[in-house]
Length: 326
Image 1 (cartoon, helix red, strand yellow):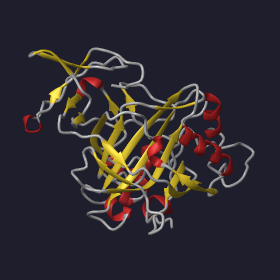
Image 2: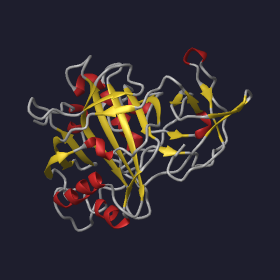
Image 3: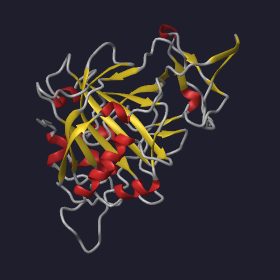
């Protein structure tokens, strides 16, 4: 059974197209409950600058139940979205661990942000780099709230797992299932059933994460999301990636095609937020620490103050490794 009570973003027209009045720059003006999109101070997505990462030794890896779930993939007119079913016979997968304070979160949906041609589609960026795709698994706190809608308006309500997708020789097997399904949802409101989706198979093989407090990246931009970025990409072949660029915003063919991609919100202001990580670092001496497996050059910027309460350590990126982001 697929249930999702989200009246705000479905009842009013909105778009990821910055060239239209319904675009992200005006979301906060379109509908009063969306004012957070314009006035919020903890908005998402953000850029992740390596020099701002704070090491938290108490930050554990995340866990997603290793089960297959009933789901459907649909073209909303703004994005390809996977809705996860939940029933006594086929429960949804739960998300636990990481920065979630012992709460259990039920995966409700997967929002997919994709580029087209030379325009990459990820919403989050790593040291200014944008990736071809981003999968956002959105889960709600079932220990505190009855449904996704209530949780999205409440503290500790939503967890978002961001999986970035980069180009590779072969496509992740689970992502390939979704890629094949795109042929059935080329037009707005089309949907296709996915009988045996395994969300956990969309995660890369790493325990390293980065986390910060932010918001939904679509209207109404509620600032109730604990974001968790996994520190490796999964991969997609370029030919498979091209299939995602064929989806349209319209319910039928038009003379001038209005492609769905790229469907992304611009990076938002950092606003001095803490970005914590469990990426292990090596101590050169008592004065300097460094994190292995850095793949990006850091940009300039002053770090936020460390928090002795959490025994956070500021990370100085020194070494690189091809598979990891940070």
